[in-house]
Amino acid sequence: MCGLVGIVGKTDIAPDIYDALTVLQHRGQDAAGIMTCSGGRFSLRKSEGLVRDVFRQQHMLTLQGSIGIGHVRYPTAGSSGAALAQPFYVNSPYGIALAHNGNLTNSEQLTRELFQDDLRHLNTDSDSEVLLNVFAHELQTLGKLSPTPEDIFTAVSAVHSRCRGGYAAVGLVVNYGVVGFRDPRGIRPLIIGARDSELGTEYMLASESVALDVLGFSAISDVAPGEAVFIDMEGVLHRRQCAPQSKLYPCIFEHVYFARPDTLMDGISVYKTRMRQGETLGKKVRRERPDLEIDVVIPIPDTSRIAAQSMAYELGIKFREGLMKNRYIGRTFIMPGQSQRKKSVRQKLNPVPLEFEGKNVMLVDDSIVRGTTCRQIIEMAREAGAKQVFFASAAPPVRYPNVYGIDMPSAAELIAHDRTVEEVCELIGADWLVYQDLDDLVRCSLEGNETVNGFDCSVFNGEYITGDVDQNYLDRVEWLRNDDAQNQRRAAQHADGALVGIHNDV
Image (cartoon, rainbow, N blue to C red; front, side, top):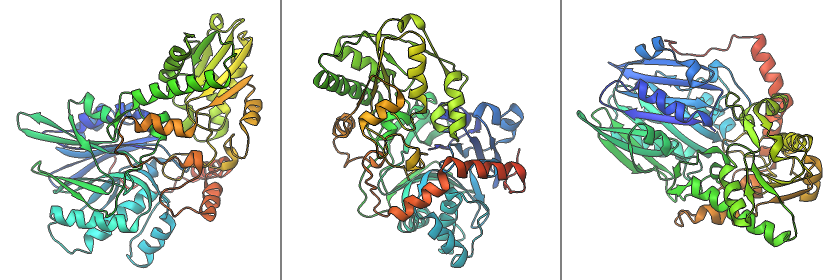
C-alpha cells in the first residue's frame, strides 16, 4: 500500500507535493520521493524514511517545476532500500517517471516479456519498475516524436491488456504532462481534483481525497476503473476509458484500516463506514451475548476509535480512552518483520489503569491480522487490573493473504488461517471474541455508494477477483513474503550496498 500524488500547476509545485505526501504518510513509512520537471529536465529526491526526514530545505529549493509526482512507499513484499524508493525513471521514450500503488500478480511473466521481447532492462525486483517499463514500451512502439493525449491513452490501454492485479499509478512525461490510471477493477484508489489560481486551473491526482482538501483542491471525481487521465503542460484535462468491461471492486480493507477516516473513496465516506461497522458489531454482541456484562468499551488507537464509539452508543455502555498512544511510533501493521512489530506494541501503547481495574472491558480493534498487537494489549489490560477482557474486531477473520498491494503475507502467519473463532480467542488470551460478519461489513460500505459493483474481500473469503490467482501463485507469495525470507533479504541488502538506485539525488 502506497500513497500517490501528481500535480500540474502554474508555479513550482514541490512544496504542495511535500504537503500532500505528509498527509498521506499513513500509507507508507518505508521511503518517500518527489520528482519535478522544468525546462525539459527532471529533478528527483528520494530516500528511505519518513517525508519529514527525506526532504530538507536544500532539496525543496532544487525541486523546481510546475509539474511533478510524489510517492510514499510501503513495501508489500518486505523488500526495502533506497534503490526501491519511487518514483522510478526511464529515459526512453521522452523521459518518463512513474509512481505506483498496488501489486501486479503477473509481474514474473511481464519481467520475462520485457527482457526477451521488449529488450528492456530491469534493475530491481519491484513490480513498479515493471509497470513503468511496460508503459514506456507501449509508448515507444507508437513511434511518435511528440505524443498526443490519444497516444497516451493507447499506451495505457495496452498496459491494461498486459498487466494483472491491483494498481493505481501517476506518471510524468517530460515536457508533455502528467498521466494517472487505475486498474480495470479499481482495486487501488485514485482521485482527481482541481484548484483555481490567478494563472489558471491546476489539477491534482492523489490516493485519498484528504490530500486534495489540505491543498485547497476540489474533488472532481474518482478515476474510474480502467480509466486514464492526462493533464498536458497547458493544464488541459483529458480523460478516456481505456479498459473494456471495467467494473468497480475497490479494496474493502481501505475502509477497515488503511484510509484516513476523513477520506472519501469512490463516493463512500470512510468515517461513516466505520461508524456503521461499530453499529452492526454492537447489534451482533447484543444478539449473541445479551447477558454479557460489559463495564466499558475501549478502542485500540487509532483506526478503531470510530467503530468503538458507535458500538458503545449502540450498546448503551460507557466509552473510554483506556490506551494512550505514543505519537512517535509509526503504524505497527506496516512494519516489516514480526519481531519489530512485537517490540513496537509496548512502545506504542500504554494503559490507563483507572479504566481497567476491576472492570469487564470490551476492547475494539479494526481487525486481527497476525494477532501480535491484540495478544499483548490483552496482557496489558489484565496487568492493569481488568477482571474480564472481551475483544471485538470490526472486520471478519483475516484468513488469506492479500495479493493486490497489502502485506498480509504468509497464510501461516495469519492467526485466523485454518482456525476457528474459539481457537483464535484462546490464542490471544481473551475471555470472549467477536468478529464482524462479512455480509455486514460489505453492507456498511455499500450503503455509502450502491453503484459500486462489489468489493475485493479476498483477505476474508479467499476470492481473488482478478481470476488469475491460484495455489501455485499463493505458494510463491508465501515463499517470497514470509518473515524469514524478508529477514534474509534485508541482511543481504545491508551486507552489499551495490544495488543501484538510479536518480539524481538533489
